[in-house]
Every structure is written in C-alpha cells, then in structure tokens.
Length: 393
Length: 204
Image (tube, rainbow over all chains, first blue to last red; front, top):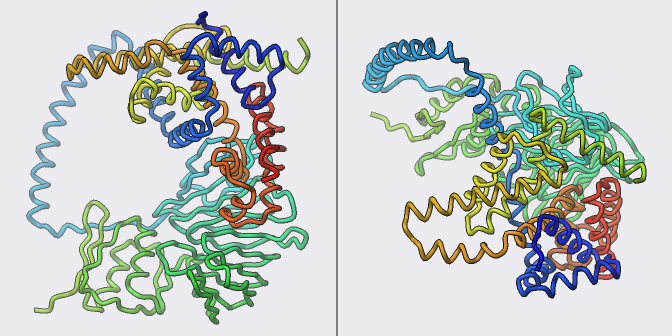
C-alpha cells in the first residue's frame, strides 16, 4: 500500500472519472489495483459511488452557509492584523487611555444605572419604532451575496453588471446566471430587470430571475408582494411564478400579493392584460384579468372582483390602505413594515378598518387608530406589540 | 503544453501571487471554493456540523497566518486538509481532557486514524460534485438533483415541479449547455459526469 500526498488528488480524480463512466483502460486498471489494495480502499470506493451517500453529502454541503462563515473568518483576519500593527511606544498611552476610560466608564455606567431605575419607576417611557426603509440583499448563482446600500433605492441588473441607479457598480455578472433579491421585514427595494421591466418589492418579499432572458419567455418567481411594470415584448411573454399561481403577461402594470400568511394570492391589474393560471388545484381554470379587476386564488377557489386598483397599490405611493381590512390583516402588514411581532389577545374583536395612513409615520402614530376602537396596546423594547381589549373603568 | 492549459496555469499563478501578498479577495475565492468540502472532511472526525464548521474556519485562519508560500493550488488545498485535521485532532484531545471519556475518544480515534487520506478523497469527490451542480440555474439544478440523486423519472419530475415533460427535457439540455460554459479543469470532469447522468435518465 502506498499512501502519499499525490494519492488523494489522483484517486479522487479517477473516482470522479468512474462516476462519469469515462475511464480509459489504463486508468481503469490503475483504479482497480488501488481498490483491491485494501479493504478500506474498496469500502471508500463503494461509498463514493453510492447514490445514497452522494445524496447525504449533498444535503450536508447544502446546509453550509459559506457567506456567513466567511464573515466570521474575515473578522478574525482583521483582528490579528490590528494586533500585530500596534506600535510599542503607543502601549503606554494605551494603558493610560484604558485607565481613563475605566474611570469615565464607571461613572457613565453608574449614571445609566440610576437612570434605568428611574425609567423603570416611570414605566411609561415611550417606545416607538420607525417605518421600513431601503433594505435588501442580493444572492447570486455563484453563491455570493450582497447587502444593498440603504441610501440607494433601486438596483439595476443586466448581463454585464449589477449596479445602483446612480451608476455605482456592485459587481460584474460575468459568471452569474441568476440572482435573487430579498427584502427583510422592515425593508423595501426597487429593481430594474435586464429587459427594462420595473419591479418594486414590499417588505418581507423576494424576486428571483435569470440575468439574461433567453428562450421564448421571460420567467421570474416571487414571494410576498411585488408590483410590476412590464416592458412590452409580444415575442417573449413575461411570466411570474408564485406558490399558488402562474401569471402570463405581454406588457402591463400589476401587483401581486402572495404573502403566505394571507388567505390566497391577490393579483390586481392596473393596465394591460394578464392571464392568471392557478397552481393550487388542477380543476381551476386560467382567468384573464381586465384593468381594475382583482383575482384571489385560494387552495380550491378563484374569485374575481372589481376593485379600485389605486387603493390596492397605495403602498407604491407610500400609503397604507386599510379600507375594509380586518384587524389581523392590518397587524400582519404592520408587522412586516415595522419589523415587529404582534401578539393579539384572544378576546380582542377582529374589527374592520376604514381609510388609511402614510407609511412613513412612526408606529405609534398609526397605533392611535386603534384607540377609537376600544383596543389598547403596549410596545416592548424587544420589538413586540401586544394588542389588548380596553377595559373600561 | 498547449495554449489553453498555460493560460489556466497563469491564472493559478496569479491567484497564488495575490495570496502571497495577503490579498483578502484572493483568500475569499479560496474559502468559497474549499470551505464546504473541508467542513465535510472535518465532520468525518465524529463532530456535528457546528463544530465541523468551527474546525474548518480555524484551519483557514491558521493557513492565512502562516507565512508559507504555496507552489500550487493543489499544494494549498493539501495544506488546508492537513490544517483541518490538526485542528480536529486538537479539539478531540481537548474534549478528552475536559470530560475524561477515554473510551469515547479511542473509539472515534480508531475510526479516523487509519483513513485521513480516504476521507480527503471522499470530501474531494463530493465537494466537486456539489460545486458543479451548485453552479447550475435554480430549475436545472432541481432537475439534476431529482433525476440523479433521487433517481426520479422525467415524468415524476414533471409532476413534482409542475412543469411539462418537454420542459424537464429542456432543463436537462440547458443544464448541459450551462455546464459547458463553466469549463474549468475540475468542473469539466463533473460536466461529463452530469452529461452521462442525463443520458442515463433521458429515457425515464
């Protein structure tokens, strides 16, 4: 048996060629002699060819998040560099500075301690949360991901690069075939696709698409809520996939609300024409929408309703539209926009709302709406909103 | 040496040169390439995934800190495997000292002591297979996983993905094209394997 440094790459090369069924006679002989050299070799060889083992390895590898691991490692690379660079003369100053900091630090701590006690006594310190802002991450087919700049509001993608609307490049797209953009709770973003189509992502939503639209259709898929202004191209229809439906369009403006927490996927057509194809149940037929119509697809039904499309896409214009919505639905919307968890007591009635308000208000401003409805609330410092029934004295 | 080979050779030299100059981007490239398979390798020392990841991370940091110059990417990769093994063994030793479970330790030791090279071969084969499939577009990747790893027929895949039979075939073809366009020496080999896989299942 000859285990040496060159053996691992050579044997793994041969086994990969074996999987490919592409060994030359000479190589096959070489591999066979290695396999028969020991029972451990034989065992490994069988293991590598076993589909079950390949699948297991694949699943294991899939669970590894390279980008976040790199973040950890990168931090430590920088830390060590800083330690090495620290000059000797600076050390004395560092000690003095540390001593000063300790004194000041203690004073600050003590002051804060007392303030904290004060606050607890008052107990009514106003807690509030800011509305969503421009936040999103892009994940590319090469495994890389980028956090988009909060100061930019839209990103454009084409076959050569991904860049902000002011021209600042994020990355080139030479070896990239597809991208996925994702907004967290409390975030939103605008995207310009390779064909010029504009998409706007609401909070907690995602959009994935290929970087070049080849073939006979332009296909993208979404979760959450996305508003589209599709560039017309009769030869290449635009297709939007979501969990419950497929939409085929020629060139048009529409909004899809496919938040899973909601009951059903809502498609609202602003202008043009779209075909909605339900995926939930094979007996459901495709429906063609006219401007001002909304389709709602649930697990076993398709509704069609006339709607004021402007109020449905109020979010595009920075407004909340709560008209006709129930408490639970409104709370889901607030939860996504303000990145908070909402806990509603059992005895709170699921009241219906009228009107709307602006989305750039702080949370507390919006919550004053509740007070006219015998409902009270408390906000906690860990981003929780408790909704309770107002007990009248 | 033909011209295309020497071109790739130059690129490798460029990478090594930048690594020697402690270029973090170059190191990130190496990290993305080898981190998953080193985790897989580390897990063969009887560790769970979190620990395996910690071991692999530490191994990379060690390599970064060492002043070594690498003759080739293969050399660097080998050093990464050696470093991972060292960290894993140290952790095992620490574990043994702290909890004094000698039986547990020796049981595990027996399992790996005879076969670090075998485990490297295993990690290499799986790592390359995974990397090649990962590079495919989402839908094509799904088709490859379902047809090859799960052994499903074209019809079963069509039903599961809710697409037509023809679309399944198209995705397979597209996957082949895609793999053709990412021809590096390592992935080329896997391209061939996936291509063969398609041939095997195309009748399904």
